[in-house]
Length: 173
Image (cartoon, rainbow, N blue to C red; front, side):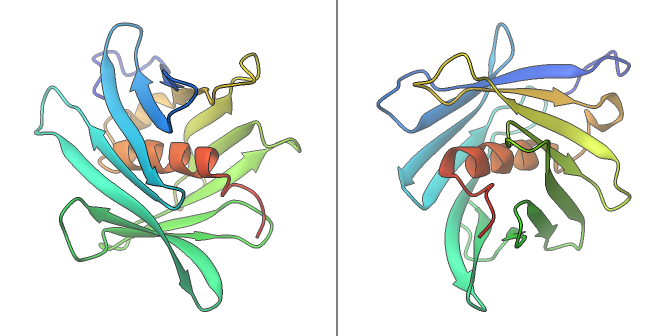
């Protein structure tokens, strides 16, 4: 996800190649960066492709804790949690990594077509905008704020954003 010119907003697209499959791809105009694949309604697996690092992959699964749903994120094959997403009562929520870093998922506007991840200082990391022109497939545009192009947690946060959008977990519980 590195870009040499850090003054530009990096724009990527989440696409659903086949309407009948719950399979999504994160792409630039000419390359595949990541895949999110739903194995069941509440379990998804993803893989991040990187030119500079080995491929990384995680699983997202829903669990109920304290009478509320949360999303457990683990590195593929690991038994320990890597991060936990806890939804807010009125929509949105926060994700906390095991090493203590926390990010916030918030909507912009009333219709829920645009979602944003913010850091603890309320700085915008990226925007996920639903594309409304394709009513059959789930498609989104990701626009990353320039200073966050190299944020270590960014790939996982983009995967989580797509998971939340596709699984319908953006809404209030």
